[in-house]
Length: 335
Ligand code: PHE
Image (cartoon, rainbow, N blue to C red):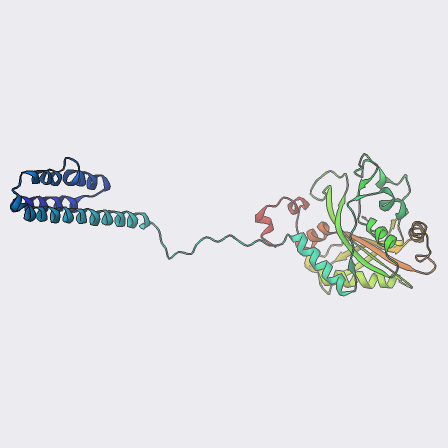
């Protein structure tokens, strides 16, 4: 019996040690410990063993079973470790991981922040108004007659109820003076809408920054000083600036502002509209408010407005305005 057990043990341990995958290990387990396995069969033979020999034989069989079970567990561990190693073999754990790349502010937002910071240093506060406007705020109060081309349905988006998507941010001038006594010194960045064919220089929705300064004795010199300071902050101290006479219904006199800098090719670029607030605008405000605190005999002011997309395109040499709304990361990452 002893010899039989020893032979079985060495045969089983050898087979288990040589098992190279889970299936051959399971086959070995069944061969010795399964229902009809060799060790199971031996244990069943205990019935025929004389009573006095049972303790000795029983111990032999228990030891055999324990040794085979331990060998099976060892082999299983060995196989799992080998599988892990194989899975990690092609991985270099010393390589850096992949990180989500941090976003940046949109170039227009960056430019708007710069512009706002500059005007705030000169004492301008930020004002706001609705994108959906009344005709009165967008046109009538701004001295724009009913037959003015800007009021045409071809140029402006009208809603069925007669309101419209503001075609410029100048409506915020009116909103501010309606509710705030002078002196007022505000800038109003925001969207404007026009029924333009979208192309390399036009969007149907774009961004403007409006400015308004009304107080006693505000002069054209204040207007020029303020805007020259602003544009030289943006484009550099050596920038040439010219105020070219123009017409806007709500300012008198009115100008367009052109900028020229060697760094950007030395060509004049038309960048903004501006002028001294027309007395007719102050009269419209007085009528609406029912008081005379905006009496054009007592206060004066200047207003200006420019398109931020146009400014960004000139500052950063962006060839097509649509790039600013396409959200192509290859473009946006350059800012
Ligand atoms: N609202 C004008 C435009 O959109 C710009 C402007 C603003 C001109 C204020 C004069 C004063 O073209």
